[in-house]
Image (cartoon, rainbow, N blue to C red; front, side, top):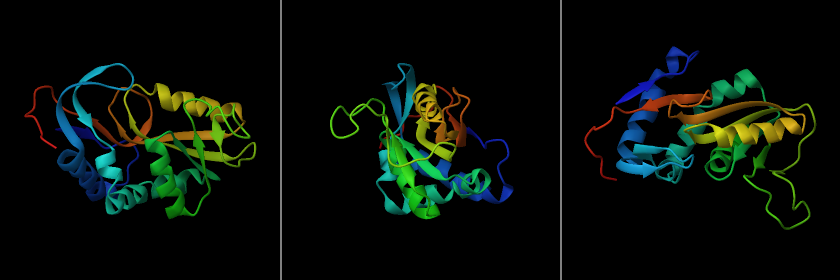
Length: 184
């Protein structure tokens, strides 16, 4: 296993980051041959829903974003469709900060059918944009661009960065090829 704690991490968070890595390894990691959302192939897959479906784990992950919330002091928490929305909801509740949702494509119906962003916002607001797992960063970069087009100031952050994108994250996660297969 290999992981790097992101630059600027506080030493007091090391036990929590180690807990997160161990939880990923024990609960959400499988080995095999997988096609990732961005089109790349990988010999491991992290099933975020095995983390986010457990309320105790989700709350603990949300609390790991407290330093980012404190540093950025956002007016809004934003989540990308679908895993980022779950995460943003938990962080929004923890921090008592309103949230918005960034869709991959407009929903095509309703009063705001052509819009990518759901929820109230005001130009100039600071937004903490949350993503679950980043591989190549295309999806979160597109979401950030959509928010910036609305004149919002955006900082993107992920739970896990597979090390292929310049996105801040709680952990940079990679594994050497060929480790023993984990059954989950």
